[in-house]
Length: 159
Image (cartoon, rainbow, N blue to C red):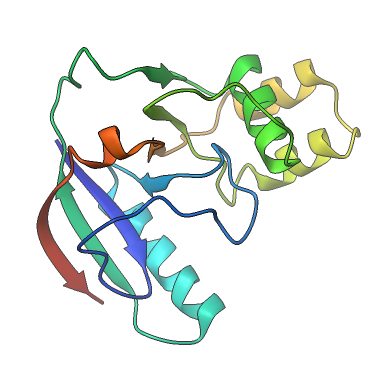
């Protein structure tokens, strides 16, 4: 399976870094199966950091995922996913003793709903109702060196 990572530079040797801001699934190395989404992330990162150039690094990842990896999967934006994302974005301690987390990404189209939920302006049920029709891209987050070690560099694409 091909996975993509968007940044303001090539990331040929990925590492687990604490993000500059609170992200959906907390600390880890973020990828997606959508090249277009990774390219958008690359442009945003470049615009935010004001250096480098938008770059998408392509990796191969074993699929199916090896059985000795502990994986948390959110098949869709549901209550469990929203509560997990909300806890991470609030900086709360969450049980994420997983090697890999896979699930929808809270993107530009969902950020308003997630923000309203985080601020207490939407109940959980209403937030899920608003998220249900969204066609959300996915994100794969390597949370451990074990998961990260399964990535094989395939290609670097500068935009």
